[in-house]
Image (cartoon, rainbow, N blue to C red; front, side, top):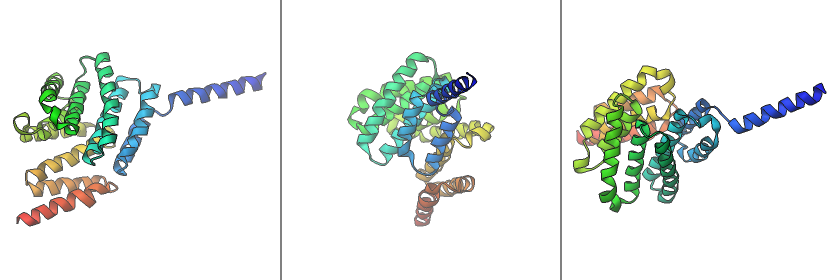
Length: 250
């Protein structure tokens, strides 16, 4: 009888672990590791698993899932993998609609939705005229609700920096990024191993580079290489590119 009870207990434990999978912290670390290894396309499988895992069925978990999809789609757009980007964007927008119904006043979901619409415009530029207004409205509402939230500052900064012409403001975008950096570095033990923080540092370097402030760009890229020596993208791509541009300008 005791043996039967023990077997049933072990089966129960195995079943619980199968349903629950990894913890949110473990998923977050997995996404970070794949980011550092420049294997972002592998996020799709991780995010799909997270979406089905009860341990991620919290507000924090849903933030991580939708932000992960945003990062994945953005990466695929940057790599010109349009078909894959559109597939994941469709999933992300469906999740965004669902999450915003569940949390109608959540600033992060509003900001993420605005950025997903921005990616939709990037994939279909002809739709900018009909989509831009809603995107900007959602981004501004998010920032108004939570100007001190680092994620919201990053996402609002993205809209300001990457949108063309009258829609954008690169200097204000940089201010948003700097504000987000200060906020995230208040809890560097947690955020130091979050892909969004590393991407933020890279983005600040890109802002300096595009505005031809090459010394500041190189300084930022050096900071990243010192903090994340295993992240080869900055060492092999960003830093040499900025250095070459600075030398050509001189």
